[in-house]
Image 1 (tube, rainbow, N blue to C red):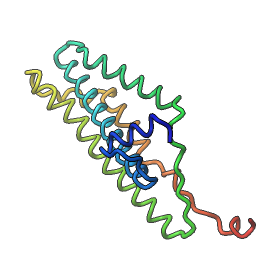
Image 2: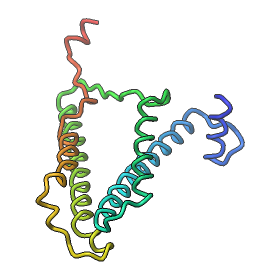
Image 3: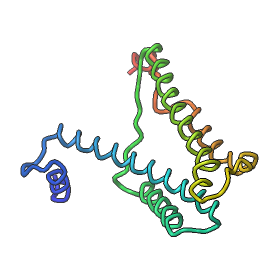
Length: 174
C-alpha cells in the first residue's frame, strides 16, 4: 500500500494501523456510495438552480459553477486511471437471471419515477413559488421540458447489459 492510500485509510477510519483487506473493501464501498449520493445531489441542485434562474430571468454563479463542475467531473471520470472496470454478473440459472433482470428493472423504474416527479415539480411548482411568480404549467406543453425525461427513460428502461446468462455448452467445451 502506497503512502497516499495508507494516509487516506487511516484518516477515514481514525486508526493508527493500516487496515486489512476487508476493512479497505468496506471503506471503498462506503466512499463509493457517498460519492454517488453526492453526485446525484449536485445534479439535482444544478437542475433546481437552472429552473430557479429561468423563473427569475437571472443567471446565477451557482448554475454556471455547477454546470462547469459537472463537466469537469465527467471529463475526469472518463480519463481517470482509477475508474472502475465494468461489472459483469454471470448467472448460469435462467430463473435467477430473470429474477435479477426484474430486480434491476424495478430499481430503475423507481429511480425514473422519482426523477420525473422531481423534474416536473421543480419546473412547475417549486421554482416559481420561490421566485415569487405564479405556477408555471405552460412549461408542460414545451418539448424541451420532456427531452431530459426521454433521455432518462431510455437509459432506465433498457435491459441491464451487466447481467449475463452463461451458455451451458460453452462451460462444457472449456
